Image 1 (tube, rainbow, N blue to C red):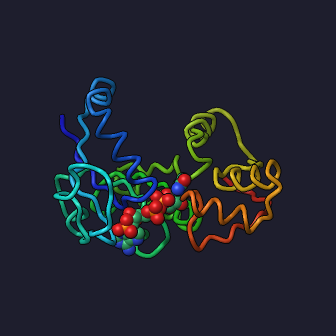
Image 2 (cartoon, rainbow, N blue to C red):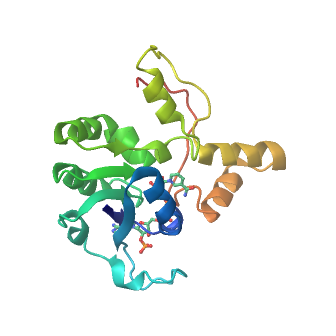
Length: 203
Ligand SMILES: NC(=O)c1ccc[n+]([C@@H]2O[C@H](COP(=O)([O-])OP(=O)(O)OC[C@H]3O[C@@H](n4cnc5c(N)ncnc54)[C@H](OP(=O)(O)O)[C@@H]3O)[C@@H](O)[C@H]2O)c1
């Protein structure tokens, strides 16, 4: 069965998602029964050079081409920021599309509201990539929550922070220098000003 996906964003993360999904279609089908196809990709600057073959016909700057397409069952939001990502994710959930997001800021600010909205509409909101980079912690926590009670989560749970601290500790960089290096590599958002603080969260 074909499973059509709308990709919101084609930057560092979005282009990686595209490459993985398109190169592993057969494998995904074998494992899940679903044959994934990225039908449309939303970008801001359509003329930007992308160095990826075969995407020109599926690029769009009009979010409605994805959000109002009833063939698209899921969106992957990898644009970053709140405006317009928050509205697009809400619109997708209300339209009963599954949502996968890597957007740390969106989940930190509106995660509870969006999870509730996903439940009400009978769709998934998956946000593993928004926490701890590629480490699958959310999946483990969701599973553990069935039998255990989790009161506190502590530690460095963010890949960007991990990169910055490694540069400071191992290369002796100053914070601003390490942040600039993370931004240059695309790990940190351009306007990001990370602040370290102890966080408490309920999951
Ligand atoms: N980079 C990482 O290592 C990493 C790791 C985990 C999670 N994340 C999260 O993943 C998300 C994306 O990060 P990224 O590094 O891939 O960002 P990025 O390289 O800046 O890419 C953002 C993409 O979104 C598009 N976009 C932004 N605003 C838009 C708008 N208003 N309308 C249409 N398209 C828009 C951009 O279009 P154009 O290409 O046309 O400019 C670009 O393709 C962020 O939430 C980030 O926190 C990133």
